[in-house]
Length: 279
Image 1 (cartoon, rainbow, N blue to C red):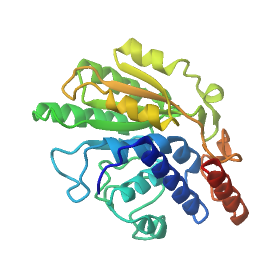
Image 2 (tube, rainbow, N blue to C red):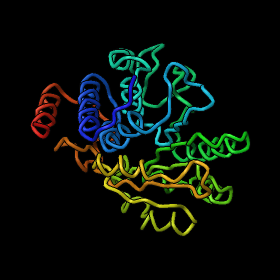
Image 3 (cartoon, one colour):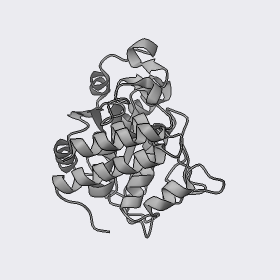
């Protein structure tokens, strides 16, 4: 399946991902708030940026993806469906079913397009660092490793241990993406573990830091286009400022929609809002 190249194409693709998420959320309990906050970034990453062949998901020359924010599995699966790994109907019909390939956290035991099984916050990022280091040891200077984290996840100590090691090992093939929507399942970051300026912390450790609007597809695409060469020596982090539940008024900035299932009335309300905003 060919890559989407224009901003307009990617905007339409992100809209389709949101439609799919709403349909699934009307049928199942999913992590809808965080799925919607990272939708735009994930759409550009999977449908434009990543070097990945769904017909050969273990090709050595592929880019690797690790969902450290493991609960954003639905938005990942729908983007993989968009590039031909499976169908949208597969995701919707198999989600949270016995023997299904899709659930509230990604699992590589049942889904070959999942690089690493994740769910426990703070675990995926160190694994991604290890994969990036392994590629360097094998002499692979063409593949990148992308890892998506939540901002609440930044309170895990393992994140900062990995961040230090990535700088020490000069892993310029590693691109970390932090979904900064300001909310966790139990409340705001300020209420639970105040993290201050996350970007400043990564800069202090020696990372190449890029702050951006995580809902501006033109900017997201531009920042991916401007990545330094894969064989550079400084790891890169995108600090993406986002809104939890983006696009749906009754979900935006609401911790209670960290996970949930919509009623039929809420579904049609949400669909109407989405379509109205994109006419």
